[in-house]
Length: 241
Image 1 (cartoon, rainbow, N blue to C red):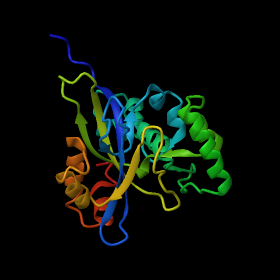
Image 2 (image 1 turned 45 degrees about the vertical axis):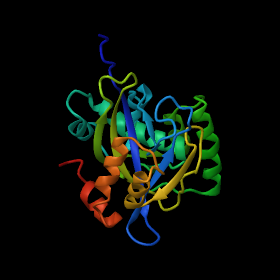
Image 3 (image 1 turned 120 degrees about the vertical axis):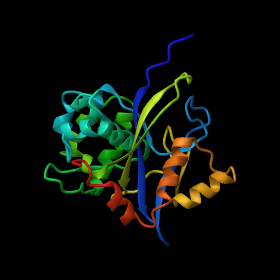
Image 4 (image 1 turned 30 degrees about the horizontal axis):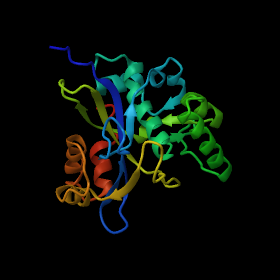
């Protein structure tokens, strides 16, 4: 019998915003049919955590969370830098797939998005996707820092041992920055939709929104909250607990 594959580290971001009517919505993407993993499925933005996400240079590019705090949440089998890599990888993947960048100045001021910066970020995102620019260089170019305070740890899911492609995925919550909107499509996003958790579950039940169980479970948990304010109160500001 073949040995189980060691799962790759991954991070997923559940992006939330207030609903125009009542409650709140989450941003769901659909993977292209041809993708080897999750092809045709709805999920949240995210992907593999790379070595660059926990390189020696990255702690200089972040704010809002220490390596010790991250390790306390992720587990002692990770180094502080490796633990921080889940947060950084999640923010990078969210930017690559949707164009939403959770960043701030060194003092914690939210990123301002002038038309000039918006144009620069479009160009640098293309270079990031082409692997001709590293995320740390993009942040340095803009004088920005990964704002880890904008993420709240939510859950962990690991692919079963019998599956060939395995991931150890950490789910995070984030609220959509006021001055940003996610792109509807990208190379790894066939289409996307904002839905309340209840509505997403309804569409899943009628086979209109295919998803794997971890996505369903996250939506089921969030459906118990009647407002974004209640979600924030329940999950944020817990890094030092």
